[in-house]
Image 1 (cartoon, one colour):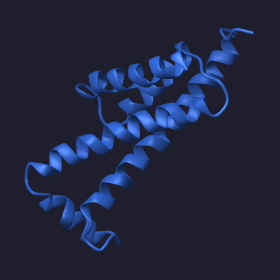
Image 2 (image 1 turned 90 degrees about the vertical axis):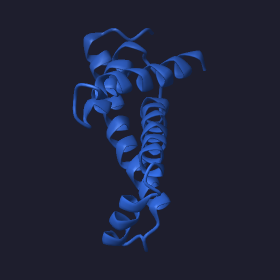
Image 3 (image 1 turned 180 degrees about the vertical axis):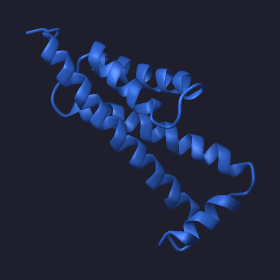
Length: 120
């Protein structure tokens, strides 16, 4: 449980730091690095980075959208088949970011195994 918590927090912190300098795919770099150095097992390899980045993106989207009363989010939600629901748009945004981070986490674990760093 401790490794999962450390990986979760490290993924969020590295993603926030890298997002200051890199585009959206910096979340994938953070998930890759944390999974490379803080090895997890089984499904946690995918789901810990997934949940960390999904939460980060949902909270960040809410924070950005609440400043203008969700006007832009509502307009984009109308363009997509979401019936103008900005909250559903934020959830979908988080899920997309989470999937990208989850796959990057799995790739980081595979590199960990390839390099022989995993503990047996």
